[in-house]
Length: 422
Image (tube, rainbow, N blue to C red; front, top):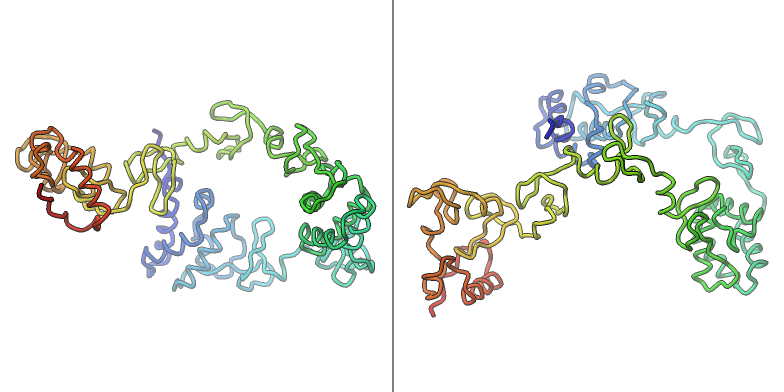
């Protein structure tokens, strides 16, 4: 396997090292807690840049495009950092309390919104809303034609499906569009094209029209028709606009299909590499940089199951987190039938020199400093006549039943219960 850069294999460790290198008074545990709190997913962690660029200049305005930098600097400041400073607004130099970015610069909530000429008064103001033609309006010239958009929707639907009560239409409209601006856009779309409600909904310019159709059909509408996908013809949810119409998720994926740079498979790209080339989902998870070490078997492979304690591979069953009786580490452990004690999968495959017989054999009990092989291990079931001469002590039906009873009736971390007398 090729060498993986440390910033890819351990981005949290790299970031913590950079922070503690700048902020000498901060202990690594505190820095790690700050970084993990704002790190997000794997991709965001790897994009996190060096905090030194803005650390020594409290008035530095330009910050690269990783959103984690702001969180790291700000939370590190709250954690007692004195050298690292939170970023400030590019225009007014005030400390940022909200995140708004244009290009490579951060802005506060006052300076961040872009100002446009109002279509009504021509003043250069923040965009409060847009009219039917998409032109900006300021807050003083906000749209108010005197009509409630819900009333417009009720009138349009009353023509298409007169049997629907007005109260049902009002409730469906409010559920499909929670904000006034969304309801206004939906009313405009239905006013211009009422046929969107009767099968042409894939051509809707706003997604709230599709949500309204679903709500009305669930309420029992008879003349309202859910639109089929223009490409495959199936009546399923339409998610994304492509070429002026909205398509289902499967057709959207087909429209985005391109050859994978890794295996050549033609499909929708799951991500892109450092050169901007597409990668399919299989190449993404199979990339050596994305493989992880499993808790249960110490193998570095594709993650099959992720638990709060770490990843588990598909071949490893979910095991309880216990203290292994051999290595002493807290990790997913099974129960050894020979001793009745927890042992982890790595120790189940571990070999060593037995402390009693001196032979190199698989370790079955003891510790790493004083291991014992199977022949030198004192069985937890010495009174069993079957296991006394069997090559695998503790695996007869009676002993396995007794072991199961012990697992159900006792604490797995407690010392083993003395064997029952038969």
